[in-house]
Amino acid sequence: MLSAMVNTYNYKADLAYLDDRRAPMTETLRAWCAINSGSANLSGLKAMHGALAEAFSALGVEVETVPSGPHRIVTRDGEVVEQPVGDMLRLVKRPQAPVRVLLVGHMDTVFGADHPFQSEKFLDDDTLNAPGAADMKGGLLVMLNALMAIENSSLADRIGYEVLINADEEIGSIGSAHMLTEAAKRAQFACVYEPALPDGTLAGARKGSGNFAAVIRGKSAHAGREHHLGRNAIAAAADFISGVDKLTGQREGLTVNVARVDGGGPNNVVPELAVVRFNVRLEQPEDSDWLLEQANALIADIDGREGYSAKLEGGFTRPPKPMTPQLNAFFLALRAAGVDLGLNIDWVPTGGCCDGNNIAAAGIPVIDTLGVRGAHIHSSAEYAKLDSLVERAKLSTLLLLKIAAGEIPNPGEFVNTEKH
Ligand SMILES: [Zn+2]
Image 1 (cartoon, rainbow, N blue to C red):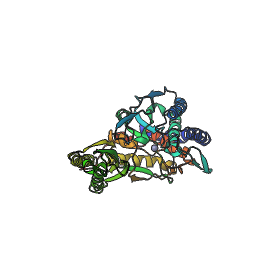
Image 2: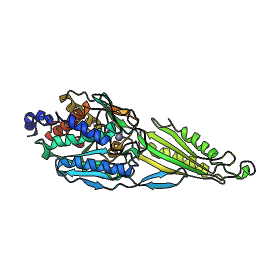
Image 3: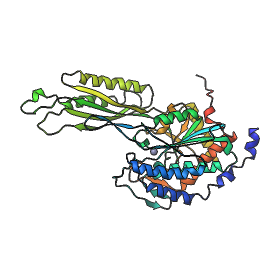
Image 4: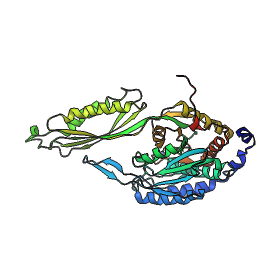
């Protein structure tokens, strides 16, 4: 029955809906990039949320505002404090449909209200340099327009979706990760709208990531008169740093980057506090336990010294996203959809991570670079290729329509036939 549909279904007519969307998408992208929505800028995030809610209401369904949990940070004084996070945006359409996809994006950017990069510049007719243009306001537009094309197609009834747009992706999604995990349980597969590379290459496997702070306390004393009474927290931190730095490479693909040290003061005072911040990237899920064991042993060594205390804050927030046979099958399905559009879909592993890591860990296949083509994200040189707005919207549309038509397999129903 499905094969009959395949032979008669006219994708071209549905995709034609997107043909003249470049100009309005560009206009909206410029308007969205003009709103500063740095992860800590709550009023900016609120404005961005409002703009998104208005745009996504075109899908004809109630747009919900969902509060995020707090983000936890370790201050320069070694204290753990909770910071508020912007609200998430969520909408659900046809949750009982045979095809159920989770679409995820983020409204926050890495550029705070005080960052010098606040305005747009056209590098050429096709290239918009603007904060968040690629990462990922362009991607949010790709998602929205693909869904609008789906709504206009006669296969819409077969496609149910949940859209989740969070406001803390760029700081690790600590306050929204639970929503991603829950939403993943309701879907068969997921699409995330991080940017692709300028040539259209997507991210395949991703490393996992954890952020930590070692808080080391000693005892201050006058460096001249009572040096022997002091306990130098920075000297102890140096031991910790050299120990944790040596963990790089002890597991395949595992890296430790000691990024910042806070503490200390005048030259004539033995410093009583050091805060060592470091990031860990890893390929194998089980290596997170190994890393914690090693780091905790280094902490325990310092904590056991007379007059010192040490503790480890933080944790792994992005589990590794391996290239499973199921994910590979999903990519092959996307490649098949790309052929019809004249696109050659390729993917490469990356050390970077995103919400796709958390969704994959929740058990469903996810392709997480379905947004615009672009580059230099997280820098003032960030740009989005405007010709990719329609191109990538068509790619997502065709992917979902072909899955709905049964022409390409539902990635959530993949059965691994490989023998182990
Ligand atoms: Zn992003």
